[in-house]
Each structure stands twice: as C-alpha cells, then as structure tokens.
Image 1 (cartoon, rainbow, N blue to C red):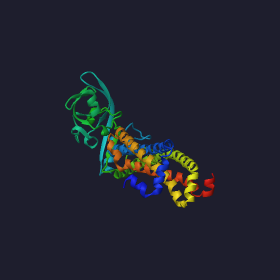
Image 2: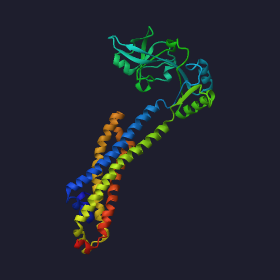
Image 3: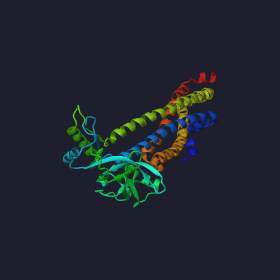
Image 4: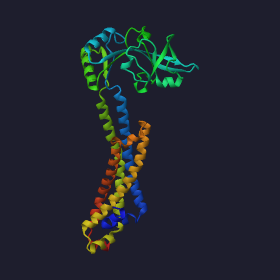
Length: 380
C-alpha cells in the first residue's frame, strides 16, 4: 500500500499529513529533535555493543586460564619449583606452565631497536598461537617473536635475535592477541635462557574451559592461602560474565543519557502540538459542529504526533546505521558487526522510542482539542 493510498483510505491520516505540511519549518525543527534523540540512543547503544563484542573476543583467549604469582606474604620473590610441583600434583586436568620474565631490546640489521618483554618457557604451545611457524611443546632452542615487533624490525622466520650475548633463531611469529608481553612486543625463549633467575615470575594454568579454570583457582587458593596470609596471588580470567554484566549496566546508562535527548524532543513535540491545536481551534470547532466525533479529532492529533515521530525516527535510524558502521569499524575492525542483532537492536529501540515518545507528547493536546466545546472553539 502506497502512502497516497494510506492517506485516502484513512481520513484522519490525510488530515494529519496536511496539517504537518502547513508549517513545514516548525515540523522540521520538531522532527530534528527526534532525529538527534534517536541518533544519541542508537549510537551510544551500538558503541556499547561494539565494546562488548571486542571485550568478549579479547577475554575469550584467556578465559580458561589461571595466573599465579608470588603473594604479598610470600617468603620468596617468585613462585618456587616446589610450589610448581605441588600445583602439578593438585591439578591433573590442566596444563601447568611456569614462566620466567625479563626485558631486553631487540635490534635489526639497520640498527633499529625495539624494547620487548622476555618470557622463558618450555611449553610454548600451551600459551601461544603463531601467524607463521609452530609453537613447540618443548622449546629447547630458538625463539618466538611477536608479529608486530618482527614487522617493525623487518625480522623474518629464521633470522637471529640476541639475548644476554647469545643468538637465538626465530622459529615463529606470535599472534598479537596471544602475546603476554607488556606493550605488545614479546620475545619467547627457552627457560634455560633465564637460568640465572631462581624462581618463576608467573605460572599459567591452562584449563579446558572458564568454569574449570575458576574451580582450579579456588582449589589452589584454598591450599596455598589462608584468611590471614597470601602465599600465592591467584587470578582467574573466567569471570567474563561479570564483565558482560558491567557492560550491560554501562549500556543502560548510555541509553538513559541518550533518552534525555528524546525527552527534550518530546517536550518540543508537545509544544508543537499545543500550538497547532490553538491555531486550528476554530477549524476543529467547525469539524465538531458538522458532526465529527471527539474520537476522530483525538485520532487526528495523535496521528500527527505519530507521523512526526515516525519521520524523525526513520531518518534517525538511517543516520545511526551509518554511525554504527563507522563505530564498529573503529572498535572491532568489522563494520558489518553493526548489522548483527547485538548492535541492530538499538536501531529498533531508537525508532520505537521515538514513535512512543511522540504519541505520548500528543496525548494532552489531542485530549484538549477533542474535549473543547464546539461553541467555545468557534467563539475563540
């Protein structure tokens, strides 16, 4: 059904459309408020969805891990071999990977240097995914280097890197999201390269899933720590649900902020509807005098408000979609993520909020116009 057919089939819609066109500037300004409100709600909501999607993606790679470091009441500066052996005895359904850490500068043939963190580990395959090469389960020689550092320095697989006066050949390049180094750059060496360090700086336990990791963290905390003393600091990353809850709360807060714009726009529509009914008081009085019922007048005024909200909401949704594509491109690198329900739902919410808010704003002017006596309206 076309717009023209709709207008002629429903006289109240036809009259409402005609009345909105009487004062185009006022209608456009009122619709502009709706557009701004819709764009505010949708853009803030889609930004939250993009952040949540990115956070879930980042947490997904470490959600099944337990990170263990020396506690504040520990007698040693690090995790000891005996503590690692105890962990392996307690944890039989997960991989225990002790690591020693340091930092160094990696240089290229042209003399350029990049500061990276150094990790000494044996089972590199449990912690790292590579863009090229293969992470061995027993790293006894060679090295792994983060992809960004290799790109910056022009280092390729098979090239040598130096640490503590000894050369190691690069066996593979680490994916950035799996690099455990600080600042993104990381050099992974055999544990023997950091043999001068007596204790481990961190022990990572890789479980099958996040719930298992949480159980392991609780079991180790109960074994090593008491209420008064913390021998080991045990951190789990499996609480992605808490992060999701926080982001949902953030989303509601941002939607409330965007909703303020629509509330302001609703006040503008209320003002437009009141002005319109005052200006057309005599016309409405004539309509009532010739037999038009109150319900028809009420329907006409409410239809004006609904049309204004729908028009502003539609334009706002189109602009919000363009903004959403840009937001997802900047945050996640995938603009099409804005078309998924997690992001697109805010377009529906924004449009529905615009129409509902507009109709509610038109209730009082419609009631006032419908209940004005024809004699008083004509006299006015």
